[in-house]
Every structure is written in structure tokens, then in C-alpha cells.
Image 1 (cartoon, rainbow, N blue to C red):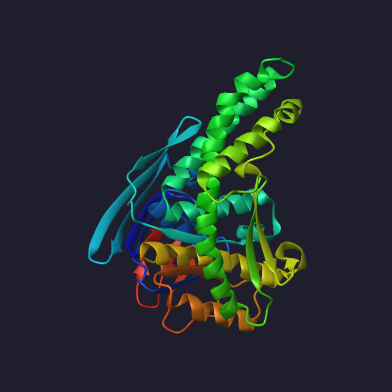
Image 2 (tube, helix red, strand yellow):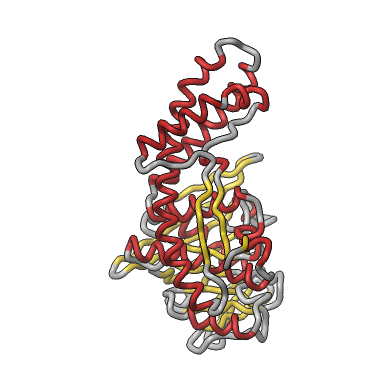
Length: 365
């Protein structure tokens, strides 16, 4: 799968842009603050409807524009689909118009992803849920419904504190949480099996000589062999913890409190690994995500990799570049003079203008 062309209007610092990336490897090079990341972000939004930089799509609208328009063509095999999206400012909010391509997939990497290894469990849960939803789209809807029920239970905990009938009134919410939660946990475990196998293989290539990479699911309620048994166990844990939850106003067990443990060798990677190793591990997690899509769905997602090579030594950069050149359509950003693998198309980005040695692509700041 690849994006044949992309056109932007009113998107961040681009008043207009027409860009036709190569179906293979593309390097966007230039000084910081010139618009490289914005091109990668636009491609990601075109393919997924989401930004990898911000949850607020309103930030993508140019300063003097009331809307940002994104148009492009996505190709898979012999099928091409034109996608038209508009992000429109509506008072204090935003309205996203258009229809996504249902089979389009993208995997992103950025410096902030380092939190997958070094940060709090919330980021790792989001990574695992996002990767699982790419394999099983229904997982995303289950997570959305679970969060809704969880918020409703939290409000109820505040209202029911001290009431003798609190357990009876919480019971239907606990039934919903245990049903949805058990489904989420088992889908996560299934997705993690695919991710972990791919990550181990990629680690052997990108980090030869390092310790074994382990990805392990750490649950607040240990899952059983079946969804039904896990549902019963989770319901029992929620019921047993009602008094505690009422005291603190929070639901303290369930998949929203679980974690993905990342270990390199015998130690937690977020503590024992060097900064360069942590960055490589983060990239491996993203590459494993793409490998899972390719294995399950038979298609390669588009890679958008921001500031890919910073903080990596020469050998690590060489291994990373050798790997990504085999992964289908890849777009990565870097600074002028940075290493570029043989066969890559180089695009120079300055002042919201994107150009290559062979062609200048319109972009007016």
C-alpha cells in the first residue's frame, strides 16, 4: 500500500502543497521548523483520521485559515481510492468532514514515543490497544465503550459513597465492565502474541548482541483461559473492591489499570537501557506493529517516521536504514547532511516548500 499523491490547503504552515512521494523510501531533509513533520502528520491523518502529534486536530488548521483540507490517493494492488478530508473550525471545537479509506493503514514514529519504554503505563496501554485495533478493528469500539462505562461508574462512585444500597446500584455497571473488559484483555493478549514475536525478530537485526527482548502483559486481574472465565473473575474482583472504590472514587482493577512490561535482558528497559537503546526499542515496537499488520492482513502500512535517526550511533543508523528500505512506502525526516540509504528519494524542505533534485513541488508559506 502507498500514497500516490497528497494535496494540502491551510494545513499548519502550508498554505498549499502538492506532493507525490515515491512508493518506496523517501527522506525529507532540512533544518528544524521548516515543515517536515507537518508533511508526515498530514499523510498520517489522511490514512487514519488521527494526528500522531496532537489529539486536537484543530491545531492542524493554519493560523489564517478557517479549515484545513487534505486530499490524496491511496493505492493497494490494483485498487486506488481518493480520500478527501477537511478539518473545519466550529466555534471552540472542530468538525472533521470526509470518509476515510477503510483499508488504509499507517504506522508512525516520533521522539515522544520514547515514553512507550520510559513513561507511564497509560502510553503502553494506548500502544497495545492501537496495534490490536489495526488487527481487529472491533477492538477500538470495545475500548471506547469500556471508557464510557468506566466514566459512568466513576460518577456513580461519587454519588453513592456512604449509601447502603451502593452495591446493588453498582452491579449493572460492574457487569458491563467485566464483559467489555474481559473481551479487551483477551484481544490484547492475542495482539501481543503477534507483536512480541515480530519484536523479537526485529531486535535480533537492529540490536544484535543485546539481551533478549520480552514483552509481557501485567494484569490487575489475572486472565483465565477463556473470555467467559475472565469475565467472571473480573466481575468478582470489581464486586470485592466496591468498598475501596467508593472510598477513593476510582475503579482500581480492570484493563484500564494494566500494563505492558518491556524488558531487555533481565532488566526493565525503561530503567536499565541506555538512551540510544531505549530509542531503538521504541522503534522496534513501532516496526513490530507494522509487521503484525502485514502478517495478519497481508498488506504493508505506510511508515511515517519523524526525526528517525537522532541519538543513534553510526552502526545503529546503518542497521535501521537497511531495515526500513525493505518495508514498502516509508517517509522519514532528518536534518541536512544526515545519512540516506541508497535508492531513497531525497526531498528538501525549507520554508514550507518541498522539493527534490529532480522536481520542485509547490508549497507556499
